[in-house]
Image 1 (spheres, rainbow, N blue to C red):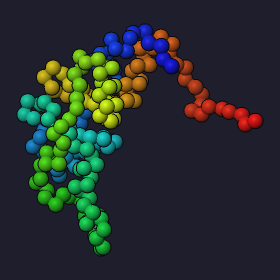
Image 2: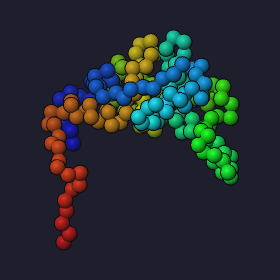
Image 3: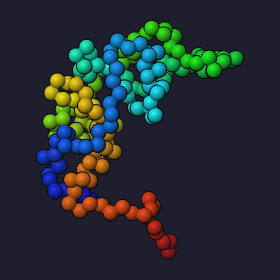
Image 4: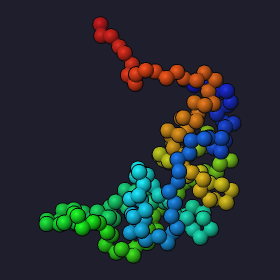
Length: 171
């Protein structure tokens, strides 16, 4: 168990140093353009976010939803479909916001880490966008990033074990 130098309720989200980059697009982006942009990423994020004209977060799209629109079940099950032809949504001009969730949870960089943890647990979130006072995105707080950061607030830094496995003996 970590023994913290500071009370966890005193640590602000802005003190956390391990944000993940946030993937944001303008609300008007087409689904085809979003797919092309996401295709250049090294890793597929859990979600991408949409911003309004002022750069404020306004919606979230689970990447799973994007995949469901690119790979419609009818195409996958169709015989003689040439998969090399690529995948496009049924309507290439469809805006990504049409499949977005407008109810998004985010947290201010000035909020307490304890509040972020409570929100993530209550809403079963694996990532939580961090925003500034204007609701503009700064990054994404994940459980892994949060745990890495909390270790830096510990009095007794955990030692790195040589193995990921605990040894045990059978009687």
